[in-house]
Structures are given as C-alpha cells and as structure tokens.
Length: 468
Image (cartoon, rainbow, N blue to C red):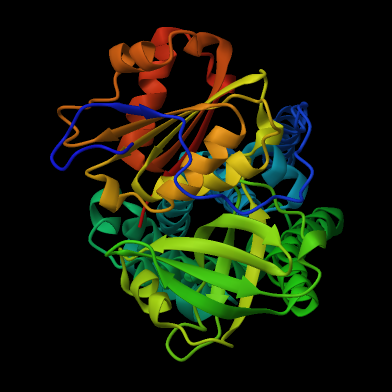
C-alpha cells in the first residue's frame, strides 16, 4: 500500500499495483564489457601526442632558437600542433565511435571531453599570441602591425583567426556559470561551430606550419589524420543514424501524460526487435515537426521494444521537452544511438541496487526489463511525492516480478538525505552489489560519493545523470 498524504517516511513495498507489460526479450548476460578498450584508446592517444611533439622537435632547424624571435616561434608551432591534435581528439570523442562509446559510456565520454576541453583552446590561444610576438621580434616591428601583416600577406590566416574566435566563443559558452544561463538549444548551436573552427584552421597548418612546409610526408600524414577525424564524424554521427532511421521508420503513435510535468511518447516502427537496444540506454531524438526538426536531444528509453512499439518518458524542463508533449500522431522521428552503458550487461556482481530520483526512474524502469526472474533487485525511488514519480506502477510490478524490494522515499531531501547512513540502512549488503544511480546531477554525485565511502568500488557504480 502506498503512503498516506503528507507521509515522509520510507515506504518499502513488493506489492503489484498493476501488471507490467510482458517482456519477450532475452536478458543480457553478465559479462565484461570491452574493459580493455579504454586502455587501448588512452595508449593510442598518448602515442599520437608523443609523435606530434617529436615531429615538432625533430623538424626544428638548427640554430633557429638563437635567431630573433626563434624561441617564441618554436613555442607557437609546438602549442599549435598539440592544441590542434587535442581538438581532433575531442571531435573523435564526440563522434561516438561505437566500440569506444560502448566501453566508456556517454558519461565517460563526457568526462574525457570536459577534461580535454580547456586545453585545445588555451594552447591554440597561446599559439596565436606567441607566434605574433615571435614574428614581430624577427621583423623588428610591433605586434599589432604584425597581426595586420599576417592577415594581409599570409594565405588562409584570416580563416585561422576566425576559427580561433569560434573556438573561444564555444569555450566561453561551456563555462559552467555561463552554460547554466543558456538554453540548451543555444549551447548546442554554439558547439556546432567547433566543427567549422577546425575546418577553417586546417589549411593554414599545412601551408604555413614550419613542420609541414617542405615536408610532404608530414603533410600527407596530417591530412590523413584530419580526413579520418572528419570521416568518423560523417560516418558515426550522420551516416549510421540515417541508415537506422530509414530502416526502422519510427513515428509518434501516442502521447500520454504521466504526471503534471512528465509525458510519455509511444513510438511505432518496424523491425524494432533488431535494434540493439538495452534497458537503461538513451538515444538522441530528432522529431521532424515544425520548430523541432533542426535539433536533437537525448532521452532515455523507458519502455523497450515490444510488438513494434517503444517508449520514451520526458520531463518538461526546457522548450524542447515541453514541445514534444504536444506532438501529433504520425510525426516522423529520426534518432542516433542507442548510447550508454547504464545497462545490465555492465554488472560485475549478481546483486543489484538501483537508485532513481525523479525522471531518472525511466532508465531504471527499462533496466529492470532486462533483469531475469529471481534477480532480486533492490530499488530506491526518491521524489517529493508519489504523484510526482512517473511510471511508479510499472516499476513496482517489475520489481515484484523479479523477487525484489522497492523502497519509496517521499518528502523533502532534508528528511530523506540519501547519505551513507541511509544507504546502509536500506541495503545492509550494498558493498556486495552493483549500484545503479540515475537522476539529477547532484543526486547522482551525492549517492555515488556515499556509496564510495561505504566501500563500493568505483567500477561497480554506474551513473546516469540528467541535466539541461
């Protein structure tokens, strides 16, 4: 039985409120998921960085450092090469190459992206500044006059300055304090300019770079790396999604209001049983309707493919998420993915604990579909009230069908702080389980931190953070 109005005590239940949709899917088996790939990727990236630095040092002419402006010109060339290389690494991460994404997951790719993000912009800014200073020293003129000379006299230099300006704009938009004030749609468009920035800067590297002028082998290798990077984006961010969209032909079939601010969109398509989708994964959705077709947003699948249908459940936090609740039946849908490793296949142990805050229940609900009978999961739901928790009946039924335990925590965060003490109280053997936590970023971070303090190893903590 559910809580009484105003009750803020933890509620534990294994009763079924309403039958869950029957599942005809085969649950994924326990196993190691490409654990060697992150090491291989890191080693390859480090080797590439070492080669870039080696080329810059090897091709430095004898005596160049002692010439006027020589040190600044060398520093500018080195920072330009390294900065461009790191920028290409960021683009490769954003291209979501399937084996890499399957190993690192979207959160892992995002962490690497954020880690690398400041470096290309900083290094390329230094590159521009010290080259101007170095060439000004060599020409015995002022820095401002040298900038004018660069733009007027050197091929492709104006495009390179424009590319750097676009990078600085994208970097400024990514600062946490700034991003929180931007609409997601604005932030997304600004980030698209990074591709344009790299394209604008490509030509001047080969035409003017001291490590490339007169070095045809270096030029060929650098051009091949650029082509491979651009090809990865075209193939995995455009080609593969287009092929899958045309194959499965998804359309909006029904829109259901789950709570006052949460809606489910039921999609119909063909051959959905062949879509390599696991519970807990998300896709980038593009609804081909007026005002929505030009942007893609990530939403977790809340109901896995069954008899030609699948479902996403969305909280109306921004313009896009509110608008899709008004979609008409028959609206065509394009998608990228599926993405994410918040799945049963990532488990390291047989026992599983799942924590969901708010709309994070969507990932947990689909994850439960992929668990076999008798798996006995422990599920903790956190919301201000039962009325604010979407898909509650379905989660209750799925937990009961798998012999698990459901804890429902309703009330203020202060009264139900999901700290180490409460986790230990609800799940005494949590250190022997895999922990899945989905919801707002602050909830995911605090629960993961509490679990770590209890002794749950990081590789057994699986996160799915929701943010604008």
